Amino acid sequence: MYDTVNLWLPFDKIGSYDLNKTCQNLTGITEHKKDDGQVYLSGYLDNYKVSISGQGVSFKGSLAKYFLPDNFHTLTRSDSCKAFEMMADEIGLPITKAKITRIDFAQNFLMRYKPEAYYSYLGESQYYKRQPQSKSLYYSNSIRQKVFYNKIAEGKSKRMELPNVWKGENVLRYEMRFKSRLTKQFNQPEITANILSDEKFYMVVFDKWLAEYQAINKINSFNYNTSDMNSPKDFRKQLELFAINIIGQDKIMQEIENLRHQKAFDKPEYYSRLKRDIRELCKIPELTTSSELVTELDKKVNDSKRYYR
Image (cartoon, rainbow, N blue to C red):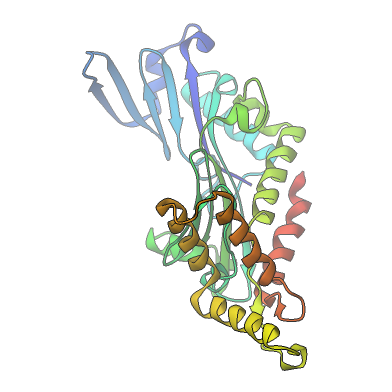
């Protein structure tokens, strides 16, 4: 389930090395000069961009695409070990000693409907900014990003040959991007390439990927229910739900954030309290039901635990 893995290999981890051997399998090598006069080289090892400076070597790219024919599929735990061995042979450097600076962890799901149909049922997620796009849905903060997108649409936009088993299918990809401060995120003193194949670490990454999905507020469908309407208060409650359903829960949550920026309320806790009240209103069993699309996606994501190993 690994995809993008960025690496940094400082020279103090390398020892002596042969620059010619490192560069012999790189393509598109160019020389750059920084403002301070420092010269560095950059080139490509397959899809990986490799930059060699006076401090060390950086690698940025998809480990899945490097090792497999494409990144339609993701790397297993054991495949990551083989991929780094292949990279070390090609570039003549001790890749397993490299520090990991980014990990993307992802899985593709064959769905009943087009991926875009599911996005509207995925609401806010605490500590993230929800960013809907035409073919995707992003949740972003300063160190992480979770993304849902149409993998087939992405492949077609890049003119990639789709796997035969995907033709005519709806493929939704859920991807968790750990973009910075990885040692703090995973509570590790150091994270190097060799740890990706470690079972315990893999399970930790998987659990975070799963927990981040579960932390997203799922939006229920509204049921107009006259049998549960015994007073004007009940009617007003259903009227509120109806309005939320028409406007969109995500848009209302964003409006509350706008109010926060405008300092509309005297007490800061009012914003989170208002959000909580809306979430609770939208979960009333008698008036709302979970969408079949949410039920399907929940099951697909939770069932992926079989990929633990």
